[in-house]
Length: 194
Length: 237
Picture (cartoon, each protein chain N blue to C red):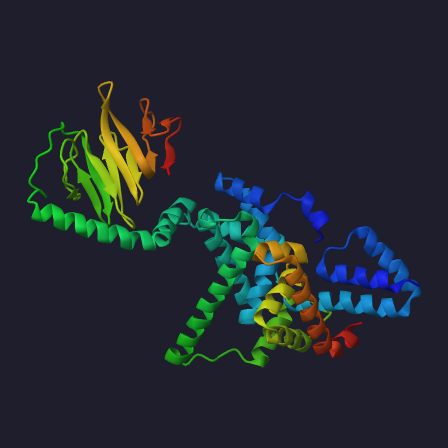
């Protein structure tokens, strides 16, 4: 999504104002705008698309119920991503409790492979998808978030800077560093896919 | 060939700030320049594979429908309630300060022998405390002492209510209309033109009125707010 394109869309601030005024459809537009980004963030923490979608849903519902507390509507996506990460941490804590108390099995690679194969995307094999996720998760936290907001969420570097309250120059530098690392780490897959 | 220019454009592509015209220009150039073609292809493929690896099985439209359905089904998910709760969280520091002040005030009142001994002089009004959370103080007209409001306290004309941080209360009138007074608020019951009027000195209160209702106002230091519908919130900072 380029900045030019964004300008033609209703801004987050306008949609949030409308939502606070009782317009539920406006919140629907916000969900549609950031659904992929939140699911992507949740997958990076949880690993399973089905569970990540549940977390995304919970995150949006939490964001809706706490919308009044949002101080800067222009940073909605940054705020939402924090909520999503928090929801993921809660899920991981629940998992750990479940594993220690009931002896539940952690999701292994084979199980994850089966589940990810259900996504219906044919370009990548389940193994490749798993490998890409693993490489992105290896990135430093700040790079990881940028890559997901940029490539999965479709936000530009300028928009990410605004959402995260960072300087645009800093975000651009981090983005290029993250891109360089990923390009090196994923060179094998990129050759296979190209 | 000026590849420097196209390298800059590829950087812009990565940053997501490239215009459609420049993308077209880049594609045209890539047809004749192997190096830029390779560079651009790697860039687009990397973006695609990352997107695919982290993609949702549901489309954004389906995601929206799912969230909206859950919001509609979950009647307990309201924004107003959240505002109330978050005000409590946001006021943690204020709550400690207010708690200390309250303790000092009550101790002083007790030692001066004034707390709980004075009788209100104003007429009793047909209202009751429907809900009470935390610490709410009440001062009767003409008296200096503050008393802790109780659920069964009588309400008198001229009463001043002060809700501490993390505290709130609801006044219910005869016709079941309610006024919810939020934390850190001061509300005074005054007689105006022979009628009981609510004066919000500061803080926030929400009135939920039974329909139909007679003209209803909440006065503030900045002016008078009239109820046109059945529910409204007044905030005085």
